[in-house]
Image (tube, rainbow, N blue to C red):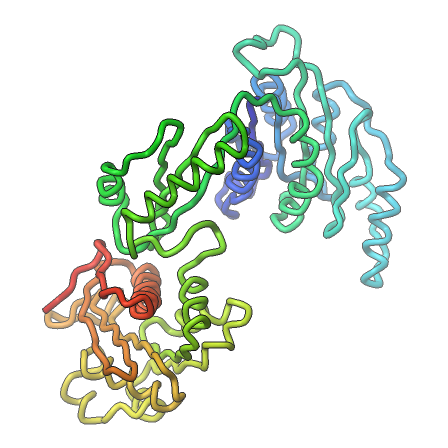
Length: 439
């Protein structure tokens, strides 16, 4: 089966909205062992939409359409789909009643323009939307006459699934309505399973080189992806059935993680660096606090975004000015005067000060120059000091990340969290390849 993802909207082509729907839909299809062959974005223009609908029907078996289901004049997906394949628009009374009830729950009366969302192509199946006003639809159409079936899709018909463009609504509809309708129609000769290994501290090319010596079994392929400041390894295993594919993937991940060592901190979407570190903190009953200057609260925000982080996260101090560093963290004025705020002695004093004030077992502190201005010959833009303090003592590293302001802050926060993780595991500090450790 060949799949295609179509996203509709002028705002996507103008760059006003980042199109994340394509990647989400393709990932979900891969869970059904269906690979997406085409991604297309089209404007809210009827003639352009007709063209991409017809082309998709020729070359693809499953077409996932996102966007254009709203009530306004530029929401044309259902209307153009019906016209393209010669179907009348038919009112679905049940959908209309559901839309009216949606507004009534909020004490509002439905505007008549919303009734447009209850019309569907004749013969289509309505896909309920429990979190929005726009129902989706499934329409099965024959391949257009003259279509090269052998060079196009594998089936004599094409399935169009039209879903809202709002990610929250689309994700739920894909999960509850679309996936169960596609699964029984698959034509499988093998089953594939994929994993995502998350690494920090090594570049994509170095990562590929490091893994070249791993002896992977036949049926396993590796892919690589960068999501700053991390790099991901994606092993895909293919087997005769689900059990064989699962077993092959498990053996492959074990071999890859053994080679990567502490560079690999997690697996899958849920095992973010802060989630993995938080689990270690909870397991070891270690409580932490943070003192942040250049990162401006990013470290604390990432930890507290995790439910249950109150088990180990006591709090943090954003001490941006010298006065705040003195008043809130007890950094001596003479240290600031002699060494400046961006210095090893001040970073150490910040880490020790926040540990003393919160009674934490482990603390981390950041102070640096994220730019674009503020640097000097001795302290260039990109310079940062990260310090770690615990019962056994404290230490700091002087690092240089020649990056723009936002990425400098991101990688500093990531490095600070990763240093905590490595400390808990008994591993040594390791500088990411993108940076440079200064003497």
